Image (cartoon, rainbow, N blue to C red):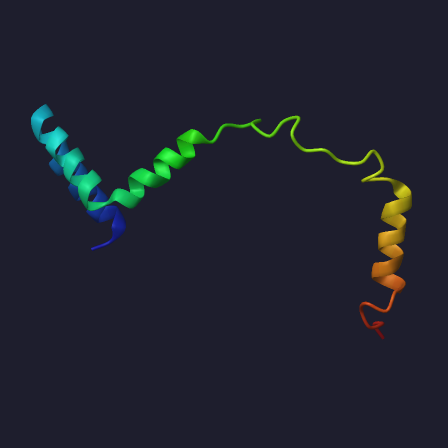
Length: 84
């Protein structure tokens, strides 16, 4: 049975449950598959922009001079052998 078939079968079964049965199923899922709940809770806690203003970079961190120096070291230095 493929994943899609299993999902369809589960959806069909869930559609016929009443509220009490759905709550019991939800509780069973939480007990049986706790790792899925943890992932969801961690994702909910993360918010975009929480590090804004907390990271500092020097004014010249992306200067042309530094970029050229890194490029020269990378392509002309002894770090990597010359290509023939």
